[in-house]
Length: 454
Ligand SMILES: *[C@@H]1O[C@H](CO)[C@@H](O)[C@H](O)[C@H]1NC(C)=O
Ligand SMILES: *[C@@H]1O[C@H](CO)[C@@H](O)[C@H](O)[C@H]1NC(C)=O
Ligand SMILES: *[C@@H]1O[C@H](CO)[C@@H](O)[C@H](O)[C@H]1NC(C)=O
Ligand SMILES: *[C@@H]1O[C@H](CO)[C@@H](O)[C@H](O)[C@H]1NC(C)=O
Ligand SMILES: *[C@@H]1O[C@H](CO)[C@@H](O)[C@H](O)[C@H]1NC(C)=O
Image (cartoon, rainbow, N blue to C red; front, side, top):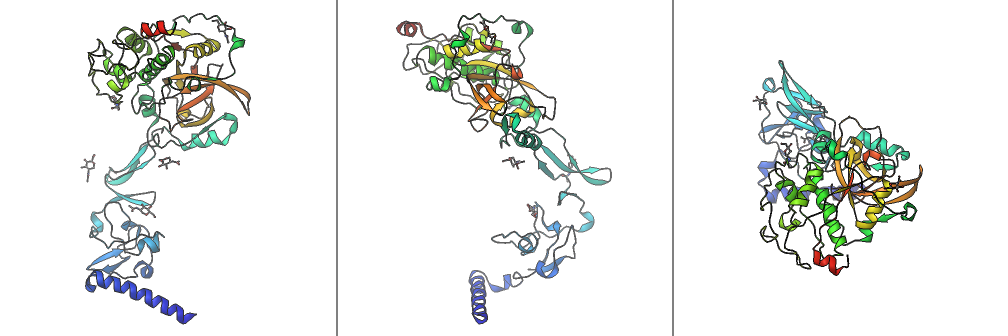
């Protein structure tokens, strides 16, 4: 047994030696074979004596050799001191700076030099001069994703929904989220006084569940991602108008309308800094918009209105639609308001998705599934308004009994929530979602309406 082992190890050593010899002149690597740290041990913080000679310089086995900008660790430091197997431990390249000049901060087990930074979620720490010494100074922002919220939402199933860490929100502040992921300014008082339309129907005849994206799969706009641009006011407006074009024309004017057209061409638009729904709808009603391929979404403040604000589709250099003789831009009738839960349901059932504006609390950003209801887990009082598209409703047995919900399309991409949608408690004006709900009639080409018998 033992002699076998000796034969095996010596042949491995011979093979390793042979490889070295064939690759490089043996002298260059005479020092490299070690062991180093295995002999002198691993040292904490900076200890310049914790070193060994290596190809004409010194290598070290202390914490200080583990820095971002230079490496002067001995080749076996990683495997022996850190238990990490690097494929090719490099020999040191930079001579170590003399100790008296080196001033540094020590933070979470690492050494940082002046102005070096480290980031923890949305907060940056920087090694900075404070009086005569160096100290690690850290920002104290509330982050968009806070692990505490995620943990506490999931720890109690009675919340009725689940939270998770969304990678694209990690590292951003709550302030960024409120400013750049929402973007609907609260309607002005006179707009809020707008009277809801009266509807005549039998509430008992409404189905228990309904989903526009199942009922009209071809006409319902997919989930969009507004990016870091406070444009929900325009994105939701364009999407609701698009859906209704498809539904009312029975597919003959199936179109995706351009949100960027609204963002960039409204006079005095603040772009990604948010906007008002009444202005967005008035703009689409008066001037109309072009389709998405003709003026694609950029989600940038700096996209200018590259088409003339008014005129026909041809004047805007847009390709005319295939199945309609339309020449003008896509317009809508006046926006109208829906007054209560059943009126909203009736409207969706009859004519398609509606636009709703809801108050967004901190916990909402981590939503990943279930029926949302805001909790008191938010870590800050910052809130914002966000416009979305209600596409349907339903009910589900949960730990809280039979729970009614709305199904809502958000504009944060399909990797957020339930494939880009969320469900929220229905019938109790949760987060004000039933307080200001709007719909419009899309101005489908008259010839199509006639041929569709409308
Ligand atoms: C220092 O070592 C730790 C492992 O102990 C590692 O995670 C870290 O990335 C290293 N730092 C640098 C700058 O290599
Ligand atoms: C560190 O940052 C300060 C302030 O930003 C600057 O004045 C100084 O020159 C920087 N020092 C080094 C060594 O980069
Ligand atoms: C959240 O996700 C980011 C990016 O994927 C990751 O770097 C971070 O460690 C995660 N945070 C937690 C608490 O899991
Ligand atoms: C909503 O208002 C309509 C009248 O527009 C009324 O018939 C209906 O009962 C109301 N529904 C609820 C849930 O209050
Ligand atoms: C748009 O401008 C605002 C305010 O100047 C800025 O905070 C934001 O980051 C900008 N957004 C984009 C997407 O450039």
